Amino acid sequence: MDRAPLPDRRSFLAFLVAAGILSPAVLAGEDPLPAGAAWQDEGRRPGSPTVWTAAPRPWSEAPLGPAPGPVLAATWNWGPTVCEIGARVLAGGGDLLDALEQGINAVELDPAVSTVGLGGLPDEDGRVTLDAMIMRGSDLATGAVAALEDVPLAVSVARRVMERTRHVLLVGQGARTFALRCGFHPRELLTDAGRARWLAWRSSLSPRDNWVAPGEDHDTVGAVGLDGKGEAACAVSTSGLAFKIHGRVGDSPIVGAGGYADAAAGAAAATGVGEEAIRLAACHAVVEGMRAGLDPTEAVRRVLLRHRRVRPSFPGQLAIVAVRADGRVGASALRPRFVVGIHRSGRTGLYEVPPLS
Ligand code: GLY
Image (cartoon, rainbow, N blue to C red):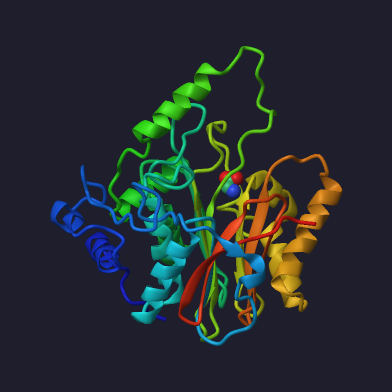
C-alpha cells in the first residue's frame, strides 16, 4: 500500500510551530535551535519545550479503562507533550506512526532532556550515541537504529529503516550514513551542559574502577498508542545509559525488549536500565500477557515480579507502559518516581505510577 510522503524537515518544524511547541523564529532561521529562540515555557521546565512541571496526579485518578477512539501513553514528564502532539497529528489526519514519531521528535530536539537525542549525555568517550525503534502492530513492520551519532531524530531514522529498507536494525556508522543519505543533516549532539557533566564524571574516575558498578537509571522516551481504528504501535528513543562503554546498545532498539506492538494484543514500551529489559524480552512478554487477557498493569507487574524473583539485588529502575487492543492502559515500575502521560477522550494528563508492591 502506498503511503503519503513523509513530511520534510521544514513541514515538521511548521507543525511544531503550529502546535505551539516551537517559536515562529525557528522557521525564519531554518534551524530547530537557533541561538536565542523563544521556546514556549509556560507550564514547562525553563528552557524546555517538552518537560511538564505540573505535579503528576495519583495513579488512582488515571483514565485506564477501555475507550473508543485514539489512546496514547508515553513515559516520563515529557509524556504529556508526546501525547498532545500525537493527538494533534491524529486529529489532522496523520496515522499512528506519524503521531508517535512526531511526539517523540519534540523530545529528541529538546536540549534540556539529557537522556534523549540532542543534549543526551555521552558515552565514556564523550560521544553521544542514540538508540531508537518504531513498530506497527498490524503487520509487525519495524525499524530501529543503534549507536547512531550526529542525527538527533533517531526515531525518524528508525522509521526510514522500516519504510525504505528490507532490514530492521542499522547500527553505528552504517546507521549514520543511511540517515545522511535519507536527507538528515548532521549536527553536534553534545551540548555544553552534557560536556560539563561528562568532564565531571571523568574527573571522578579512579584507576581501580571497573565497568560493573551500577550506573544511573535511565529515562527513555517510550510511547504506545492505538488509533481507534484497529492499529497499535510503539516508538522509543534514547541516548542510553550515561557514560556507557562506547558501543553499548540498550533495550530501546531491540524488538521485544524496549518495545513491542501487535494490533491484536496491544503495545508496550520500556524505560530504565535497558540490560534488564533485554534479559526479560520484557515488552514482548507484556504484550503476550495482554494477548492472554491480562489487564495491562497486571501484565507489566507479572514481568517485573519475575525480574524481582530472578534478580532480587538489582538496585535500579525498570518500568513499562502498555496499552491493550481494547484501549485499556497500564503501567508498573520496580521503583518510585515513574510518571506517564496519558491521552484519551480528548484529554491529556500526567500520572504517577506506584512502584511494584
Ligand atoms: N532504557 C534505555 C537504555 O538502557 O539504554
